[in-house]
Amino acid sequence: MNNTDKEIINQYENYLIRVKIDINNIYDSIKKLDDIKKYESLVKLELEKLEKLSEEYKLYDSNYENLMIKMGKFAVGLRKIENLNVDSDIKKKFIEKFINYNSTFEDLQRINIMKDAYVWK
Image (cartoon, rainbow, N blue to C red; front, side):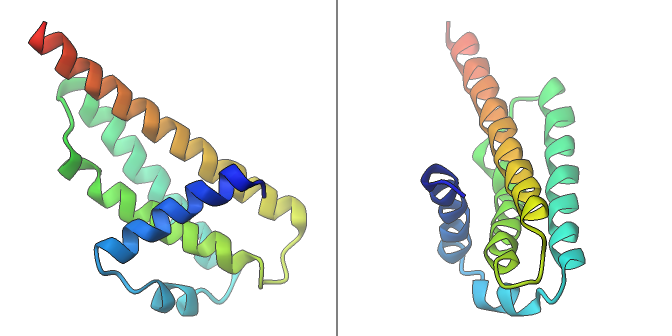
């Protein structure tokens, strides 16, 4: 995992702390790879939901909160994956998925910022 990836993961963990979600409880609840897969699938579903919603409406920060929380939990899972007996290729795939979800989320935010700019034009 490179430094940029670590910074992105830290941002989501810090978001959980800001909204007063105990990351230690999340960390302790992760016992196996399937727990991390669950968090990954929740991120995917939430992101798909936001993409569909964005097609018809402009999204605001409040629309992003659930995704940010789910990404934070997935980020905690990525920290825990280091302690699980998991093949390094699988670890890399999870990190790649996380970074791709983050990129998609950032693109979605940019699109919605452009919607604001278009309205004010």
